[in-house]
Image 1 (cartoon, rainbow, N blue to C red):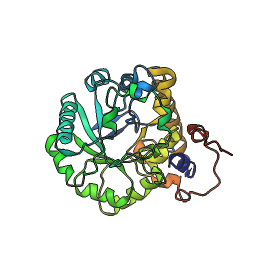
Image 2: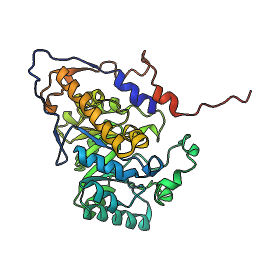
Image 3: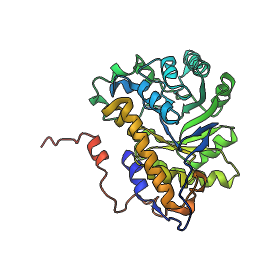
Image 4: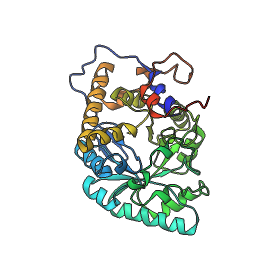
Length: 335
């Protein structure tokens, strides 16, 4: 699934318009009441102190300077209050917890996030149980980077249902977003339950192996939502590596694209400066792509500018994704 998230973007090609005045283009776009510098945000990745000593603080500062949201992870290396102070406006990602005590702690976190200025609550819904993550045991120092929340990472809420959304609505005025939608039927259900937005996500390929690539799901979901008359914003993450990837996602109907590994790799290499440089590179690539496509503003990045006929074909001739090849330790034969 991790591999397919990236390869899916390689199966979408551009159909640029010509003879359009693109001397000046506008990359800004409104998402959830926030005018973004470009349709991009840094998504929630847990335990960023394992990558850099400043962890979430560095990402928060970089996002603030650049003008895009930071989706702050619940499982973080720094207190939420400190992250909010460094970054200002933010979205908050949450895992629900089971049982009466679990819900009590969840409510405390939600109310804290709202009091600190959180503008949207992203409830992760793709994790009723922890997926089999074969790479994780190699991170011996994992627990040092989660601020004492390692136990919380394993407390998945297998009892959460659609009815639980009403409870979330009752404890916060923040916008409610479901993170982890992977099929059109659930997207339509989310719209019917009055959810403010959804995120097409498969947890970076770390939950259910052989889930579809998020870009494939995005195309299906947007078509289904528009068919029932819903204009609910659809965000997407997974596999975003270049500004041209962001343009492809927007053309297929996404309101914004989330960075996961891309921002974390930049953080690990150069801290806050690395994240800032990453965002600058993506903006330059996105702006160039937008101009070459003949789109003067983000709203003009429409489906007619891409050829996605091969998107759903998982067995096609594609270049090797070296990032995936280097991500996992190969098994050694005992023979």
